[in-house]
Amino acid sequence: MKCPFCRSDDSRVLDTSHDKRGGTRRRRKCKSCEQRFSTYERAILDPPLIIKQDDRREEFDRDKLISGIQISCDKRPVSATTIERLVGNIEANLQEMEEIEVSSRVVGDMVIAGLKELDEVAYIRYAIVYLGLEDLSSIRNEIDILLEN
Ligand SMILES: [Zn+2]
Image (tube, rainbow, N blue to C red):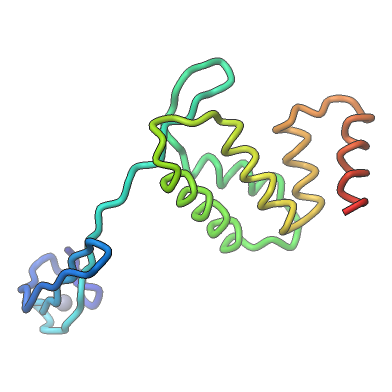
């Protein structure tokens, strides 16, 4: 564990405690700069595998999801931090489902629901790609639904 002050790898554990959530907290002292810091360790579930439309399975790819959303948010007032947070929430939701695999559709729906709250234009852009809205009338339908709400 690297010291957050001097990046040294060498620290001494002063004490160890456990919390109710099954986490372990270690108070440490850096052997190089002598600063104190704590580390926290907790087991988390890996997100489920994603079942693609062609039935292949792939690992949940956080960066890929972020870049897909970034494209939809191009020149829109949605910050990188907001996108990070959205993807973080989606990842946490997936972990909490405790499934081994889920359809990519589930992930797409979560993104769509999130974007709908954040920015209507980004939402429509994402929906066009993701829902495969190819013709103008289905895009228009989607916009109409949005405007009614
Ligand atoms: Zn240090």
